[in-house]
Amino acid sequence: MSYLLLTLLLLPLVGSGLVFAWKSKSSKYLALGIALIQMLLTFYALSDFDFNPTVDSVLQYEINYPWSHFIKSSLHFGIDGMSMLLLLLTNILLPIIILSSFNENVSYKNSFYGLILLMQFGLIGVFTALDGLLFYVFWEVTLIPIWFIAALWGQENKRLEFTTKFFVYTFVGSLFMLAGIIYVGIHSASFGLTDLYNAELGETQQLVIFWFIFFAFAVKLPVFPFHTWQPDTYTYSPTQGSMLLSGIMLKMAIYGVIRYLLPITPSAIFGISGQIVIVLAIIGILHGALIAIIQSDVKRIVAYSSFSHVGLMVAGIFSSAIVTLSGTFTIEGAEGALVQTFAHGFNVVGLFFCCDILYKRFKTRDVRQMGGLAKVAPKFAILFLIVIIGSMGVPLTNGFIGEFILMKSIFDFNILASIFAGLTIILCAAYLLRFYGKVMFGQGDEAVLSTAKDLSASEFSVLASIAVFVILLGIFPQPIMDMVNSSLQFIFQSMVN
Image 1 (cartoon, one colour):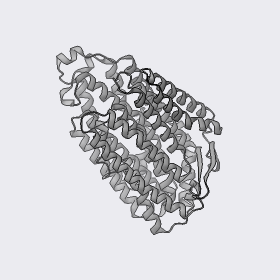
Image 2 (tube, one colour):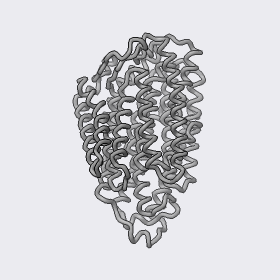
Image 3 (cartoon, helix red, strand yellow):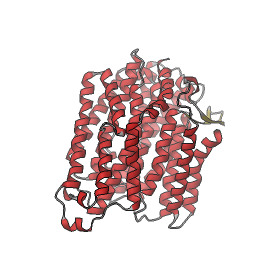
Image 4 (spheres, rainbow, N blue to C red):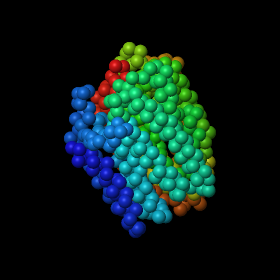
């Protein structure tokens, strides 16, 4: 099965090269075709995937070749339940993201779609790398295409300023992570993941390493107060750039926290550091939600909403880790975070696409200048509502079960923390229902509404696909939890051993 993993890893890279060389208006169809093949290969891998492996055999697809004995590193890739979940998220969303651009007048199409596929290559490398240095290399690879996408195809004149800020933040954070990984690797047999877990580090060393590595993840998520790049970058990036950043790229940090940070620095997490992160995450939950309520720019509403939701995931992960290190073994917080990660990917991509549709109809992102669209675009109104209720975590939608598990995990850690974190449910309903109610049922400009049309075929395909996942995952969330269970058991056991 190593050939299947190798194909999943290399197909986007080869496809990116082909699309770059394909200087034709049809390059978008070539890119979509490659992304669809990649999605089908992922489903094929899933069809042979064991959802209940033993904790000692969580890897079901693996490649391991020597890279450099001098630096104790190897080209080690593998897929377990957690990797499979994020590969599914990446490879299902990529065709949707590409299709979402079909109504756009994209300049230099071959470069634009080639960069999207190059981004996919980097993401798959991050989610399958089982070597610390290899993880860092692919982490950096993802930064290059998204910077070009945001800077060259972004909106308005300040896009370069904001994307450069994002690049600097992320690059500096990555250097801290590299320093931390190198230090851990020096104190272990190799940079292989299991060897990093077994590194002999004292409490002070773990404390320093924790903050070095966490800084990179905190910027990417982002966690308060490292979030200042996020609203502007999400707002002024092209729609597809915003989708890639929020729908998939920030999930690299969730993955990194669970895969690397928890088992390498358990002493630091059990100490004051873990509690500080939970406090910062809860501040982010409230700060993001309160700012979203007063925003009038539709993309900024979604950006701050994403920031708030990510805070809940981080708080749940660290709550579960601290409870486990206190002597009560539980993976609930991490499990809830991964379920919510998968759900959030579809919801936020759907929300940004809805923002793009609204901008095309009203020629503005200001929600105060929108209204009355439901009477001329009923299909859009229904599908938009499904995405909204999924984002709110309404029962029987994809956002409910992960949010519920996360709240329970935080409650098990601290009742007061769960009360503050729980305010996100009320605040989220406030800003999303206000948003939806205004654009769909508010007083609109009749001149604008007279020319507004319902969804085109490609727009309907994108939103309908997302709506299917919103409902399907809300009704059948158990397969996702089964998929990641063994991986989390292995990681959390490594943390307490």
